[in-house]
Image 1: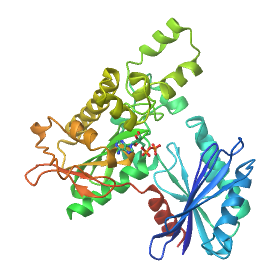
Image 2: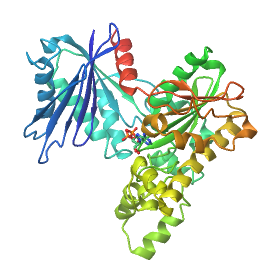
Image 3: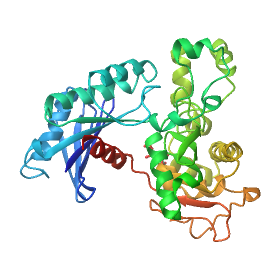
Image 4: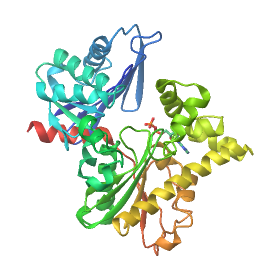
Length: 396
Ligand code: ADP
């Protein structure tokens, strides 16, 4: 069974074609710079890469190129578009409407559009991907998987902000959380690794990429998460500030004469590792600068790991314990120093990292010592596979 997974962004389309009979990846690729100069497609099949540079005016042209490349007699992996049995899409915001993946219909599309007010950069682009596929792959049913869905189990006392209640009623201002597909996947995987049902475990999952979030997973369900109404809250990220005193916002706006949009831009794109270090938003660059003696880069690193540690502590308190901590995504899977620093001085919890085992990149491995009370793991995330599995399940 061929399932195409699509992550449609404002100027890009990421895709993976799965053979779901054995969950193998037949092809994966990326169309980027849609509608701007230098647009191109990159595709990888069995480790071999091809690149096509051509004008790609919009998502429809981009998606057509994806299908042509997948079915091309030389570069292709299928002979006909009919071999795509279904399409699974990543959608960022499902609001309070969706606590799981669903088959697309008009009502689902309307709700995705309605949730665009909560994710104006993402949902319209995700919806565009769905509509383009409806047009170009009309016989394949489509499924959507939401970044927010897994977090819908979070109890009300954790998802509400202590603002006047009417803002929740009027505008649905609350914590939603993101990266849900990834948190759910690694929580289930760590339970498998530990040979225990996920329903019996208290797990803290740390998804540390450019965007970063921590989730408390209690008995297999999300119990709290660090991102909020938008992906800005919580950890220090590549360019996002994460938690700050909300009163700092009007204070800086007034001092610097900034509009709400400019302030939003400052907190989302100019803060975090980049803003503090002044060097880069990329963890590798910040680590390099810190080891060359750059004090602000070191400070950015320390703030990053300190914030991860704070969330581990607070989620342990909320769940009344923790059995496993998981690190995933770009930094979580590769950054041994970040993992080590985030777990240092957690001896009161019985967390002990094994330095040799922690020297690992991009593969599943337990990194805690055999006598550590809490199992700490690196687990590579695979959001595309979750979307493909959900799609297969739903179209049965
Ligand atoms: P995105 O949120 O864009 O999907 P990723 O999950 O790809 O992000 O993570 C990107 C981050 O991973 C970058 O900050 C990058 O520096 C970091 N990263 C990649 N490799 C390493 C490494 N070896 N050590 C530390 N950080 C790394």
